[in-house]
Image (cartoon, rainbow, N blue to C red):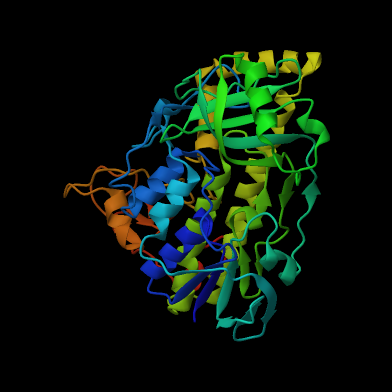
Length: 450
Protein backbone atom coordinates (compact mmCIF):
# COMPACT_ATOMS: atom_id res chain seq x y z
CA UNK A 1 0.00 0.00 0.00
CA UNK A 2 1.27 3.47 -0.85
CA UNK A 3 -0.25 5.61 1.93
CA UNK A 4 -2.00 4.88 5.22
CA UNK A 5 -4.05 7.80 6.57
CA UNK A 6 -4.87 7.51 10.27
CA UNK A 7 -7.95 9.54 11.20
CA UNK A 8 -11.18 10.01 9.25
CA UNK A 9 -12.00 13.61 10.15
CA UNK A 10 -12.09 16.36 7.49
CA UNK A 11 -8.29 16.52 7.24
CA UNK A 12 -7.80 12.79 6.74
CA UNK A 13 -10.72 12.49 4.36
CA UNK A 14 -9.60 15.36 2.12
CA UNK A 15 -6.05 14.01 2.09
CA UNK A 16 -7.31 10.56 1.10
CA UNK A 17 -9.44 12.12 -1.64
CA UNK A 18 -6.44 14.05 -2.98
CA UNK A 19 -4.27 10.94 -2.98
CA UNK A 20 -6.98 8.95 -4.74
CA UNK A 21 -7.23 11.70 -7.36
CA UNK A 22 -3.45 11.40 -7.83
CA UNK A 23 -3.80 7.69 -8.55
CA UNK A 24 -2.30 6.59 -5.25
CA UNK A 25 -3.31 3.44 -3.35
CA UNK A 26 -4.57 4.80 -0.02
CA UNK A 27 -6.22 3.30 3.05
CA UNK A 28 -7.88 5.46 5.69
CA UNK A 29 -8.55 4.09 9.19
CA UNK A 30 -10.18 5.48 12.30
CA UNK A 31 -10.44 4.16 15.84
CA UNK A 32 -14.09 5.22 16.16
CA UNK A 33 -16.62 2.62 15.08
CA UNK A 34 -18.84 5.29 13.50
CA UNK A 35 -18.77 8.97 12.64
CA UNK A 36 -19.57 11.30 15.52
CA UNK A 37 -22.98 12.94 15.36
CA UNK A 38 -21.72 16.10 17.07
CA UNK A 39 -21.62 19.21 14.89
CA UNK A 40 -18.08 20.24 15.97
CA UNK A 41 -16.77 22.96 13.63
CA UNK A 42 -19.53 25.08 12.07
CA UNK A 43 -18.15 26.95 9.07
CA UNK A 44 -16.04 26.72 5.96
CA UNK A 45 -13.88 29.79 5.50
CA UNK A 46 -13.49 31.31 1.99
CA UNK A 47 -10.14 29.63 1.27
CA UNK A 48 -11.54 26.21 2.19
CA UNK A 49 -14.55 26.87 -0.05
CA UNK A 50 -12.12 27.65 -2.88
CA UNK A 51 -10.24 24.41 -2.22
CA UNK A 52 -13.34 22.22 -2.32
CA UNK A 53 -14.74 24.11 -5.31
CA UNK A 54 -11.53 23.48 -7.27
CA UNK A 55 -12.20 19.76 -6.91
CA UNK A 56 -15.89 20.02 -7.75
CA UNK A 57 -16.97 19.04 -4.24
CA UNK A 58 -19.47 21.81 -3.51
CA UNK A 59 -21.77 21.58 -6.52
CA UNK A 60 -24.77 20.27 -4.58
CA UNK A 61 -24.10 21.89 -1.20
CA UNK A 62 -26.71 24.33 0.08
CA UNK A 63 -25.80 26.18 3.28
CA UNK A 64 -26.19 29.68 4.73
CA UNK A 65 -23.71 32.22 3.37
CA UNK A 66 -22.19 34.39 6.10
CA UNK A 67 -20.60 37.49 4.56
CA UNK A 68 -18.43 38.35 7.55
CA UNK A 69 -15.99 36.84 9.97
CA UNK A 70 -15.02 38.05 13.41
CA UNK A 71 -11.95 38.68 15.49
CA UNK A 72 -12.42 37.89 19.18
CA UNK A 73 -16.15 38.50 18.83
CA UNK A 74 -15.58 42.24 18.45
CA UNK A 75 -18.71 44.09 17.29
CA UNK A 76 -17.11 45.19 13.99
CA UNK A 77 -17.42 42.34 11.43
CA UNK A 78 -14.52 41.34 9.22
CA UNK A 79 -15.77 42.29 5.78
CA UNK A 80 -15.24 39.29 3.52
CA UNK A 81 -16.87 41.09 0.58
CA UNK A 82 -13.65 43.09 0.22
CA UNK A 83 -11.60 39.93 -0.44
CA UNK A 84 -10.43 38.94 -3.94
CA UNK A 85 -12.38 35.68 -4.15
CA UNK A 86 -15.45 34.23 -5.82
CA UNK A 87 -16.59 33.20 -2.33
CA UNK A 88 -16.57 36.32 -0.12
CA UNK A 89 -18.38 34.54 2.70
CA UNK A 90 -18.32 31.61 5.08
CA UNK A 91 -20.57 28.63 4.56
CA UNK A 92 -22.55 27.70 7.67
CA UNK A 93 -22.01 23.96 7.41
CA UNK A 94 -21.29 21.67 10.39
CA UNK A 95 -18.18 19.51 10.33
CA UNK A 96 -20.21 16.31 10.24
CA UNK A 97 -21.72 17.38 6.91
CA UNK A 98 -18.28 18.18 5.56
CA UNK A 99 -17.17 14.68 6.58
CA UNK A 100 -20.17 13.13 4.82
CA UNK A 101 -19.31 15.10 1.70
CA UNK A 102 -15.64 14.13 1.68
CA UNK A 103 -16.14 10.46 2.56
CA UNK A 104 -18.10 9.75 -0.62
CA UNK A 105 -16.21 7.17 -2.66
CA UNK A 106 -13.58 6.49 0.02
CA UNK A 107 -13.00 3.23 1.88
CA UNK A 108 -12.80 3.96 5.61
CA UNK A 109 -11.96 1.10 7.95
CA UNK A 110 -13.36 1.92 11.37
CA UNK A 111 -12.74 0.47 14.80
CA UNK A 112 -8.96 0.26 14.32
CA UNK A 113 -6.98 1.80 17.18
CA UNK A 114 -3.32 2.38 16.36
CA UNK A 115 -0.94 0.91 18.97
CA UNK A 116 2.38 0.56 17.16
CA UNK A 117 4.36 2.26 14.41
CA UNK A 118 7.75 1.20 13.09
CA UNK A 119 9.44 2.59 10.01
CA UNK A 120 12.46 1.53 7.98
CA UNK A 121 14.03 2.70 4.73
CA UNK A 122 11.27 1.28 2.55
CA UNK A 123 8.07 1.67 4.55
CA UNK A 124 6.13 1.79 7.79
CA UNK A 125 4.50 -1.03 9.75
CA UNK A 126 1.35 -0.03 11.64
CA UNK A 127 -0.18 -2.33 14.25
CA UNK A 128 -3.61 -2.00 15.82
CA UNK A 129 -5.24 -3.07 19.07
CA UNK A 130 -7.19 -5.92 17.44
CA UNK A 131 -4.02 -7.45 15.98
CA UNK A 132 -4.42 -5.99 12.50
CA UNK A 133 -1.17 -4.99 10.78
CA UNK A 134 -0.79 -2.71 7.76
CA UNK A 135 2.41 -1.93 5.90
CA UNK A 136 2.51 1.26 3.89
CA UNK A 137 5.11 3.29 2.08
CA UNK A 138 3.99 6.41 3.95
CA UNK A 139 1.78 7.18 6.97
CA UNK A 140 -0.06 10.43 7.71
CA UNK A 141 -1.43 11.11 11.17
CA UNK A 142 -4.71 13.03 10.96
CA UNK A 143 -5.86 11.55 14.26
CA UNK A 144 -6.52 14.64 16.33
CA UNK A 145 -5.12 16.42 19.34
CA UNK A 146 -4.21 13.20 21.16
CA UNK A 147 -2.61 11.74 18.04
CA UNK A 148 -1.30 8.21 18.43
CA UNK A 149 0.78 8.72 15.29
CA UNK A 150 2.50 11.74 16.83
CA UNK A 151 3.12 9.95 20.13
CA UNK A 152 4.40 6.72 18.57
CA UNK A 153 6.69 8.63 16.22
CA UNK A 154 8.19 10.63 19.07
CA UNK A 155 7.37 14.07 17.68
CA UNK A 156 7.31 16.76 20.37
CA UNK A 157 4.15 18.84 20.86
CA UNK A 158 5.31 21.99 22.69
CA UNK A 159 3.03 24.80 23.77
CA UNK A 160 0.88 25.68 26.76
CA UNK A 161 -2.06 24.11 28.54
CA UNK A 162 -5.49 25.69 28.47
CA UNK A 163 -6.28 28.63 30.74
CA UNK A 164 -10.04 28.29 30.55
CA UNK A 165 -12.56 25.53 29.98
CA UNK A 166 -15.73 25.92 27.93
CA UNK A 167 -18.64 23.75 26.82
CA UNK A 168 -19.91 23.09 23.32
CA UNK A 169 -23.29 21.39 23.00
CA UNK A 170 -25.80 20.48 20.30
CA UNK A 171 -29.23 21.20 21.75
CA UNK A 172 -32.91 21.34 20.90
CA UNK A 173 -34.51 24.34 22.61
CA UNK A 174 -37.66 26.42 22.63
CA UNK A 175 -38.18 30.06 23.49
CA UNK A 176 -35.49 31.64 21.30
CA UNK A 177 -34.78 31.38 17.60
CA UNK A 178 -31.61 33.35 16.83
CA UNK A 179 -30.46 33.58 13.24
CA UNK A 180 -26.91 33.31 12.02
CA UNK A 181 -24.93 36.16 13.56
CA UNK A 182 -21.51 37.06 14.88
CA UNK A 183 -20.85 35.16 18.11
CA UNK A 184 -21.44 37.18 21.27
CA UNK A 185 -18.05 36.63 22.88
CA UNK A 186 -17.96 39.71 25.09
CA UNK A 187 -17.88 38.45 28.70
CA UNK A 188 -20.89 39.28 30.87
CA UNK A 189 -20.51 38.73 34.60
CA UNK A 190 -17.60 36.43 33.87
CA UNK A 191 -19.65 34.32 31.43
CA UNK A 192 -19.79 33.95 27.65
CA UNK A 193 -22.56 32.39 25.55
CA UNK A 194 -23.19 32.06 21.83
CA UNK A 195 -26.10 30.19 20.22
CA UNK A 196 -26.52 29.51 16.50
CA UNK A 197 -28.95 27.33 14.52
CA UNK A 198 -27.70 24.24 12.70
CA UNK A 199 -30.36 22.14 10.99
CA UNK A 200 -33.32 19.89 11.89
CA UNK A 201 -34.21 22.20 14.79
CA UNK A 202 -30.82 21.76 16.48
CA UNK A 203 -28.77 24.68 17.83
CA UNK A 204 -25.12 24.91 18.77
CA UNK A 205 -24.51 26.37 22.23
CA UNK A 206 -21.02 27.41 23.27
CA UNK A 207 -20.57 28.79 26.74
CA UNK A 208 -18.28 29.21 29.70
CA UNK A 209 -18.63 30.79 33.10
CA UNK A 210 -17.41 30.57 36.69
CA UNK A 211 -18.84 27.05 37.09
CA UNK A 212 -17.02 25.68 34.04
CA UNK A 213 -13.66 27.07 35.15
CA UNK A 214 -13.50 24.66 38.08
CA UNK A 215 -14.36 21.52 36.12
CA UNK A 216 -11.82 19.26 34.40
CA UNK A 217 -12.06 18.85 30.64
CA UNK A 218 -12.80 15.13 31.02
CA UNK A 219 -15.86 15.61 33.27
CA UNK A 220 -19.11 14.84 31.41
CA UNK A 221 -21.39 17.77 30.63
CA UNK A 222 -24.77 17.37 32.32
CA UNK A 223 -28.18 18.39 31.07
CA UNK A 224 -28.69 20.57 34.16
CA UNK A 225 -25.43 22.40 33.48
CA UNK A 226 -26.49 23.29 29.93
CA UNK A 227 -30.04 24.23 30.95
CA UNK A 228 -28.76 26.48 33.72
CA UNK A 229 -26.34 28.27 31.39
CA UNK A 230 -29.08 28.89 28.82
CA UNK A 231 -31.48 30.25 31.45
CA UNK A 232 -28.91 32.54 33.02
CA UNK A 233 -28.11 34.08 29.64
CA UNK A 234 -31.48 34.12 27.84
CA UNK A 235 -33.98 34.00 30.69
CA UNK A 236 -36.59 31.53 31.87
CA UNK A 237 -38.42 31.47 28.54
CA UNK A 238 -35.64 29.35 27.04
CA UNK A 239 -36.27 25.67 27.66
CA UNK A 240 -33.79 22.87 26.91
CA UNK A 241 -35.82 20.14 25.23
CA UNK A 242 -32.99 17.78 24.29
CA UNK A 243 -29.23 17.57 24.76
CA UNK A 244 -27.84 15.77 21.70
CA UNK A 245 -24.08 16.00 22.28
CA UNK A 246 -21.85 17.95 24.63
CA UNK A 247 -18.17 18.16 25.44
CA UNK A 248 -15.62 20.45 27.05
CA UNK A 249 -12.67 22.15 25.41
CA UNK A 250 -9.89 24.51 26.45
CA UNK A 251 -7.80 27.21 24.81
CA UNK A 252 -4.65 25.07 24.93
CA UNK A 253 -2.17 26.05 22.21
CA UNK A 254 0.35 23.48 20.97
CA UNK A 255 2.15 22.76 17.72
CA UNK A 256 4.25 19.79 16.63
CA UNK A 257 7.87 20.80 16.30
CA UNK A 258 8.06 18.98 12.97
CA UNK A 259 5.38 17.87 10.56
CA UNK A 260 7.53 15.14 9.03
CA UNK A 261 9.61 12.37 10.60
CA UNK A 262 10.98 10.19 7.81
CA UNK A 263 8.01 8.43 6.22
CA UNK A 264 5.48 9.78 8.73
CA UNK A 265 3.61 13.10 8.52
CA UNK A 266 1.19 15.00 10.74
CA UNK A 267 -1.74 17.13 9.61
CA UNK A 268 -4.74 18.86 11.19
CA UNK A 269 -5.18 18.72 14.97
CA UNK A 270 -2.45 16.08 15.18
CA UNK A 271 -0.06 18.88 14.17
CA UNK A 272 -1.62 21.85 15.99
CA UNK A 273 -4.31 22.72 18.52
CA UNK A 274 -5.63 26.16 19.44
CA UNK A 275 -8.69 28.01 20.64
CA UNK A 276 -11.65 27.76 18.22
CA UNK A 277 -12.03 31.55 18.25
CA UNK A 278 -12.41 32.83 14.71
CA UNK A 279 -13.51 29.44 13.33
CA UNK A 280 -10.16 28.42 11.82
CA UNK A 281 -9.52 24.88 13.10
CA UNK A 282 -11.20 22.68 10.48
CA UNK A 283 -10.07 25.04 7.76
CA UNK A 284 -6.43 24.92 8.83
CA UNK A 285 -6.50 21.13 8.68
CA UNK A 286 -8.13 21.09 5.24
CA UNK A 287 -5.40 23.37 3.96
CA UNK A 288 -2.73 21.08 5.45
CA UNK A 289 -4.25 18.18 3.54
CA UNK A 290 -4.45 20.15 0.29
CA UNK A 291 -0.78 21.12 0.55
CA UNK A 292 0.48 17.62 1.35
CA UNK A 293 -1.80 15.64 -0.95
CA UNK A 294 -0.41 16.67 -4.33
CA UNK A 295 3.19 16.51 -3.10
CA UNK A 296 2.88 13.02 -1.65
CA UNK A 297 1.00 11.88 -4.74
CA UNK A 298 3.78 13.18 -7.01
CA UNK A 299 6.46 11.39 -4.99
CA UNK A 300 4.54 8.11 -4.93
CA UNK A 301 4.10 8.33 -8.74
CA UNK A 302 7.84 9.03 -9.00
CA UNK A 303 7.12 12.34 -10.72
CA UNK A 304 9.03 14.24 -8.04
CA UNK A 305 12.06 13.80 -5.84
CA UNK A 306 11.32 12.80 -2.25
CA UNK A 307 12.85 16.06 -1.03
CA UNK A 308 9.72 17.82 -2.26
CA UNK A 309 8.02 16.46 0.85
CA UNK A 310 10.20 18.66 3.09
CA UNK A 311 8.37 21.68 1.71
CA UNK A 312 5.21 20.49 3.47
CA UNK A 313 6.67 21.35 6.89
CA UNK A 314 8.40 24.46 5.56
CA UNK A 315 5.12 25.88 4.24
CA UNK A 316 2.51 24.61 6.65
CA UNK A 317 4.35 24.93 9.98
CA UNK A 318 4.51 28.76 9.70
CA UNK A 319 0.86 28.81 8.60
CA UNK A 320 -0.11 26.84 11.71
CA UNK A 321 2.03 29.03 13.96
CA UNK A 322 0.28 32.11 12.60
CA UNK A 323 -3.14 30.69 13.49
CA UNK A 324 -1.95 29.82 17.00
CA UNK A 325 -0.70 33.39 17.38
CA UNK A 326 -3.92 35.06 16.25
CA UNK A 327 -6.15 32.79 18.35
CA UNK A 328 -4.02 33.51 21.42
CA UNK A 329 -4.35 37.22 20.67
CA UNK A 330 -8.12 36.84 20.40
CA UNK A 331 -8.13 35.00 23.72
CA UNK A 332 -6.42 37.94 25.40
CA UNK A 333 -9.07 40.32 24.04
CA UNK A 334 -11.81 38.18 25.60
CA UNK A 335 -10.48 38.33 29.16
CA UNK A 336 -12.97 40.12 31.49
CA UNK A 337 -10.55 42.79 32.72
CA UNK A 338 -10.79 46.60 32.70
CA UNK A 339 -7.44 47.04 30.97
CA UNK A 340 -8.36 44.45 28.35
CA UNK A 341 -11.65 46.29 27.84
CA UNK A 342 -9.61 49.34 26.84
CA UNK A 343 -7.61 47.18 24.45
CA UNK A 344 -10.85 45.86 22.94
CA UNK A 345 -12.01 49.43 22.33
CA UNK A 346 -8.74 50.16 20.54
CA UNK A 347 -9.18 47.11 18.32
CA UNK A 348 -12.77 48.11 17.57
CA UNK A 349 -11.49 51.47 16.31
CA UNK A 350 -8.80 49.79 14.22
CA UNK A 351 -11.29 47.40 12.63
CA UNK A 352 -13.17 50.45 11.40
CA UNK A 353 -10.19 51.25 9.17
CA UNK A 354 -10.79 49.44 5.84
CA UNK A 355 -7.15 48.45 5.34
CA UNK A 356 -6.87 46.95 8.84
CA UNK A 357 -10.21 45.18 8.50
CA UNK A 358 -9.21 43.73 5.13
CA UNK A 359 -5.86 42.53 6.53
CA UNK A 360 -7.49 40.61 9.39
CA UNK A 361 -10.21 39.32 7.06
CA UNK A 362 -7.47 37.86 4.87
CA UNK A 363 -5.88 36.22 7.90
CA UNK A 364 -9.02 34.62 9.34
CA UNK A 365 -10.45 33.60 5.93
CA UNK A 366 -7.19 32.01 4.77
CA UNK A 367 -7.32 34.00 1.53
CA UNK A 368 -4.41 36.20 2.60
CA UNK A 369 -1.97 33.31 3.08
CA UNK A 370 1.14 33.36 0.89
CA UNK A 371 4.15 31.06 0.93
CA UNK A 372 7.77 32.17 0.54
CA UNK A 373 8.18 34.61 -2.38
CA UNK A 374 10.31 34.03 -5.47
CA UNK A 375 11.82 36.01 -8.32
CA UNK A 376 8.38 37.18 -9.51
CA UNK A 377 5.92 38.85 -7.11
CA UNK A 378 3.21 36.26 -7.91
CA UNK A 379 5.32 33.28 -6.82
CA UNK A 380 4.10 31.79 -3.54
CA UNK A 381 0.74 33.53 -3.76
CA UNK A 382 -2.69 32.05 -4.23
CA UNK A 383 -3.83 32.27 -7.85
CA UNK A 384 -7.18 34.07 -8.18
CA UNK A 385 -9.94 32.07 -9.85
CA UNK A 386 -9.95 34.09 -13.07
CA UNK A 387 -12.18 33.38 -16.06
CA UNK A 388 -9.98 32.46 -19.02
CA UNK A 389 -10.45 33.21 -22.70
CA UNK A 390 -12.06 29.84 -23.43
CA UNK A 391 -14.71 30.47 -20.76
CA UNK A 392 -13.22 28.09 -18.20
CA UNK A 393 -11.87 29.23 -14.86
CA UNK A 394 -8.60 28.57 -13.07
CA UNK A 395 -10.46 26.39 -10.54
CA UNK A 396 -11.91 24.27 -13.34
CA UNK A 397 -8.46 23.83 -14.87
CA UNK A 398 -7.22 22.57 -11.47
CA UNK A 399 -9.97 19.98 -11.13
CA UNK A 400 -7.70 17.09 -12.17
CA UNK A 401 -5.24 17.85 -9.37
CA UNK A 402 -2.31 18.57 -11.68
CA UNK A 403 -0.15 21.61 -12.45
CA UNK A 404 -1.70 24.15 -14.83
CA UNK A 405 0.25 26.44 -17.16
CA UNK A 406 -1.59 29.67 -17.92
CA UNK A 407 -0.42 31.48 -21.04
CA UNK A 408 -2.88 33.97 -22.46
CA UNK A 409 -3.66 37.71 -22.50
CA UNK A 410 -4.97 39.71 -19.54
CA UNK A 411 -3.23 37.62 -16.89
CA UNK A 412 -1.14 39.33 -14.19
CA UNK A 413 1.98 37.79 -15.84
CA UNK A 414 2.89 36.51 -19.32
CA UNK A 415 3.15 32.92 -18.13
CA UNK A 416 2.03 31.42 -14.83
CA UNK A 417 2.55 27.88 -13.56
CA UNK A 418 -0.04 27.04 -10.90
CA UNK A 419 0.47 24.19 -8.44
CA UNK A 420 -2.32 21.67 -7.90
CA UNK A 421 -3.19 23.42 -4.62
CA UNK A 422 -3.78 26.73 -6.38
CA UNK A 423 -0.58 28.57 -5.46
CA UNK A 424 1.79 30.01 -8.05
CA UNK A 425 4.98 27.97 -8.47
CA UNK A 426 6.50 30.06 -11.26
CA UNK A 427 5.67 33.21 -13.17
CA UNK A 428 7.35 35.47 -15.69
CA UNK A 429 6.62 38.67 -17.57
CA UNK A 430 8.64 37.40 -20.56
CA UNK A 431 6.22 35.79 -23.06
CA UNK A 432 9.13 33.91 -24.66
CA UNK A 433 10.42 32.33 -21.44
CA UNK A 434 10.25 28.55 -21.22
CA UNK A 435 8.38 27.25 -18.17
CA UNK A 436 10.28 25.02 -15.76
CA UNK A 437 9.48 21.32 -15.39
CA UNK A 438 6.60 20.87 -13.00
CA UNK A 439 8.66 18.48 -10.89
CA UNK A 440 12.27 17.37 -10.95
CA UNK A 441 15.11 19.24 -9.30
CA UNK A 442 13.28 22.57 -9.31
CA UNK A 443 10.82 21.05 -6.89
CA UNK A 444 13.20 19.34 -4.45
CA UNK A 445 13.50 22.13 -1.89
CA UNK A 446 11.13 24.42 -0.06
CA UNK A 447 12.45 27.50 -1.86
CA UNK A 448 12.21 26.10 -5.38
CA UNK A 449 8.82 24.52 -4.79
CA UNK A 450 7.36 27.95 -4.29
